[in-house]
Amino acid sequence: MDACPRYRVNYFAIDVRYFVADGTGKTKKLCQLPIRASMQVTSARAVSDVLKDFEIEKKQVVCAVTMHRT
Image 1: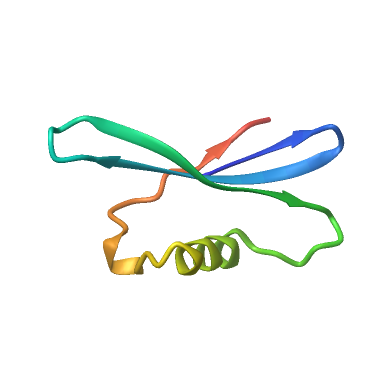
Image 2 (image 1 turned 135 degrees about the vertical axis):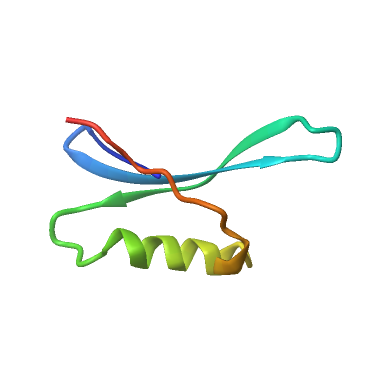
């Protein structure tokens, strides 16, 4: 998960890292959401909604890594 401002809009992104049968690591972007100051969205709610959209259960998530840029 990462959040960063671009052109006066904050974005919240969620990428997934997983391994396929041959052991190769893959990374895919699940979402990139514009978050405006007027929106009452928490990162936990955004993550929950994205997991639901992709039919990923919380018990399937091993860890979450967040990045904060200043």
